[in-house]
Amino acid sequence: MEPVKVISGGVTALKRADVDTDQIIPKQFLKRIERTGFGEFLFYDWAQQPGWSLPKNPILATGPNFGCGSSREHAPWALQDYGFKAIVASSFADIFFSNCTKIGLLPVVLPEDDVRAVMDAGEAEIDLEALEVRFGGRSVPFELDAERRHRLINGLDDIALTLQKADDISTYERERERPGPVTLNL
Image (cartoon, rainbow, N blue to C red; front, side):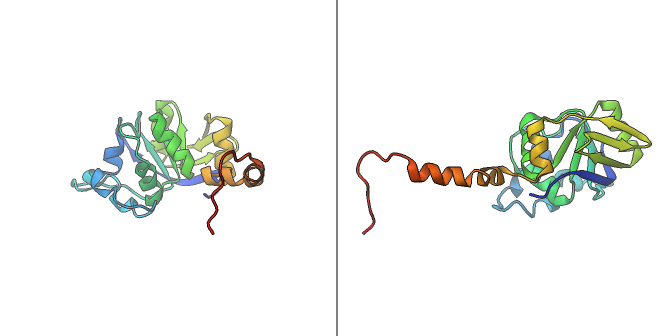
């Protein structure tokens, strides 16, 4: 996972509340086993409607309760594969929020008025180290728990965290008691 420190650039505004994971990536596209290739199906049903436009920018600003619905990991994968690096909303579904942070997609919670201001600004800078979003000549603080922030800044996914304990795991495996018969492949 790539470290996340500062994300800056254009903002794509999705002015919809309660966007669920089925809308983000419909069920018929969940057959892949890799994390890639989902971006082309992002918001697939909406993309079929006349006038739909979803500019590829690093930041998506959207309505409250984003990522509600089923807990599929495919939704953050699709958003990231499309090109988004951060999502700004006034609230997120808990599991969706967690799934984002595990892959390096930064979810940022701001008050609803500030989310609308980010949308209107069209460009923003999100500084994870400073915990602030800068847009339109303003700077707005946001919160993220210390452990998630540490993981994102250092590019640590679950596997990388486990590998940090490789020596401890090896020591445990070497030293642990093995009661009962030992089977050997002879």
